[in-house]
Image (cartoon, rainbow, N blue to C red; front, side, top):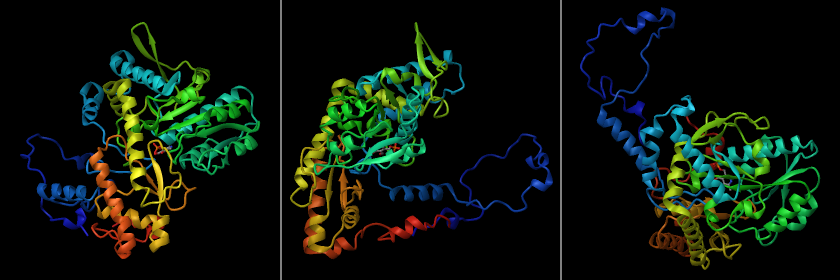
Length: 480
Ligand SMILES: Cc1ncc(COP(=O)(O)O)c(C=O)c1O
């Protein structure tokens, strides 16, 4: 195990060398009442510069990111993002502005946000967007608040339920619940799609709306979306699109054209900000014109050549985040969309879908693929064959993949598939890298048949081997 910084402490070491201060200042202690002065020196590790740098470099080698290799985490879109967009976000004119600056001094930033909003409207088929929400889940919450505000404004107080498919991402029921809706689960049919009869049976005048991901978390396109929209709208509900994975359809199809009234998109998955690591993210929410009055405030307004922040919006659900959203993430999305253009946006989508289908077809002989037909950006395999042959589970396969130098795919999600192994290669992987991954998966399938113990006891190459996952989740030891 590596030592912690505090264990590497060498008293008297110093990571910097400055000349002595020659200003005549009274010591800080003189200005603090004596009862508040600490008696002992803080236990801050003392290390030389080289030791401190080596410590963090060593730690960085233990992490795995998209800069290291393929990161096929289904439903999470861990893709490589152009570094030039990071440069754009760091330009002093963007990075050094202060959110309290008067609007007339940040016209360029407001223009960038306004143009990003317009481009997202075009991509999603919506009329207005707020850029405030800080993540996909935050966007969902904002969307559910807008649905509530809409029904309340129309004196429709009976609508207390939200329909959510059983294949949905966990944030859907969670955010809906936070907003005070009762979640009603919709069943998937044998094809992995929404069961229309179940939807018809559950759609009543207490339903506020339906939250749907299309393609769903099995990577399958809900081909009955027109009928779904008809049923929901016919019953007085609104249709919410979880667009966290917009790379699956962008440039090819638009949620607005499918009948969706509200959508959130994840800039930190689709539009050039890495997902994961706790952020920063951005989950803009778009709506059709009839819902625009409920969007959070402020929105950006343009009169003549002048941009301003519009707070005069009496029906707005209010603020959902401080200031205007994660501005740096918005800058990256702006640069990314402009650089790709409409053709490039479509290409990225088609490449994501092609890559997922390439993997699905290449792996189908070795792994059980429960819905083995054209998928969108991701697909779900399982360990059924390996389980039957050698009692090897999805977890074992995921652990063994680490020995081959890969971050494991998403495991045990979606919940409706037993032993699910959900793979999303993304548009940024080349044919060569996909072939390497296929070879690793095929090797593991072969090992499972011939030398199962090597899979069952994986990983062998990592610092930490098998851990008790339940203990680690329930009783994590996070203190030294
Ligand atoms: C389908 C789907 N919906 C919602 C989310 C939530 O997004 P976030 O992690 O930004 O809250 C995700 C996350 O990856 C997702 O895959």
